[in-house]
Image (cartoon, rainbow over all chains, first blue to last red; front, side, top):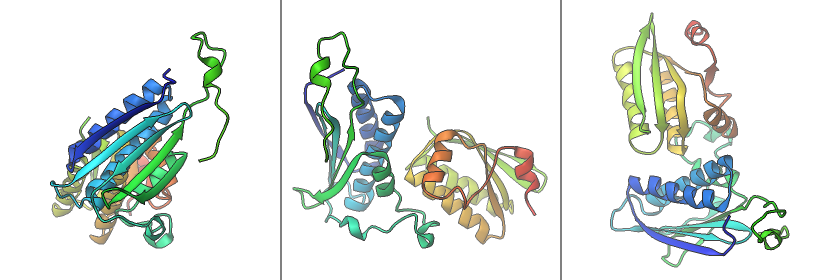
Length: 161
Length: 114
């Protein structure tokens, strides 16, 4: 179980294959960080949806644009940043996919799924001028009676976003 | 695992057996072409057997919705059969579980066509 802060950053091409690549990488990081199967699924799905959002809506599938993915692993949580090179968007303007009139829409559920699956979620203006999705999942509570001598430090207090 | 789709006729209806992932790209595209192909062949009563679909993303959900509305628009019906837990939970979360006609028995799904 890693307790030292870690930072991973990769630049992805605007192509469908990047979606799977990003998902697989983040699932591996999540597994190594000690997340269980269900949380790994939710983290993987959220990363997938974030990169789909960047690929399709942000970069509008233009291959000359890039998708920037960063993962920060702290003692408390796994934080994921997905940055596109589009023109940004405002969360408040995203239609609610659960509204009656949107239920049969064929798109527009990605943001909803990320919000549902992660503990923290926000969209901020990115340094590229595009949108930066920032989402986080709290690390599972560690067994402080552990035998590796790190238990005491792993007992982080609950803290807000 | 990439999506695979085979179909078999059951009287006036058709069962499409899907296995793998329905996700952005080939998975969603294969589902679309399979359903459109059946409609072109005048097979408008369709059961999608999702027993071996272990993963679906928002693109896949959108493709299921698209299949549902397209089939309905051609005067047919689309039913879902054997949802795995992940697909079931996603349809619940997105409130689509009540939109789709969902079955746990193939015979019941086939008998449900008017």
